[in-house]
Length: 343
Image 1 (tube, one colour):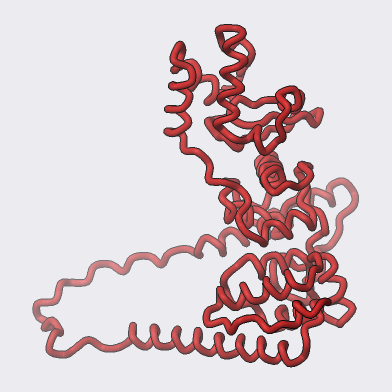
Image 2: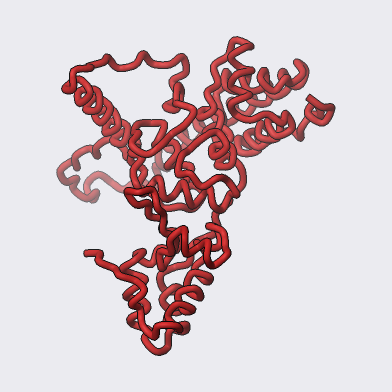
């Protein structure tokens, strides 16, 4: 590690700043998540790449043992390790104290002078039923059921296997495979989907790596300058943990107005065709059974994108996509180039 990696970072004052300081330590190390995982393991720590990506992608205070594993993998000097750990404990104490203060404030009795006499208090109706478990709880319960179902399905084919033993760390991304691809499901995929959503890509956060997730991974790869494979690997998680790569998508209203201006001869037809092809989703990517791909509002194929001489990132730009559609329309005078048979 060079000398820059050993320079102390500014003192964090919030959990978000603390995580930012850890991101800087990792950046200065020049190591990938996979390399850090190997170094941490060699030092006797457990630090899967997916756990590291999750920790560095959030603004909540990470666990101390995960911080220790990262610093050990980065080769951080002992003095700086002690400083960062002391800072973390101080922040943890402040957060806990603030939580206790809010709890005590909620329990403080009202001023007797403002208390409503019992004889004029409104009658209390039936106690409403307690709400069910919060969203995340239901989500993990659903994933647990899906996991059991998957194991039983394998068992029905003659290869029933017991559930895997929990990893050392209780984080839901521990023990994740190095590569996630279509057909997988579980907490590792759910973590990937949450990262995609945080980057501005709408995708069902259900733990299933289906066609929607594959398409969104391709979108992120295209904007991040990565090979567009639809497979989530180490490089993808490295990029997801950094700054946002995907520009904010155009709204349907903006797309509709742009289409009507571009196709004044048949504005309603332009909107109808684009809606049929992509649902007016400028970041729509569809993958055919033969592996062929179609991009953007008017779903241009890989071959068409290549003939236009642009890359996939450009193909996803709604402005370019509409201009390219207009160019084709100007040759034929209609939308016969596209055959949309969606329901």
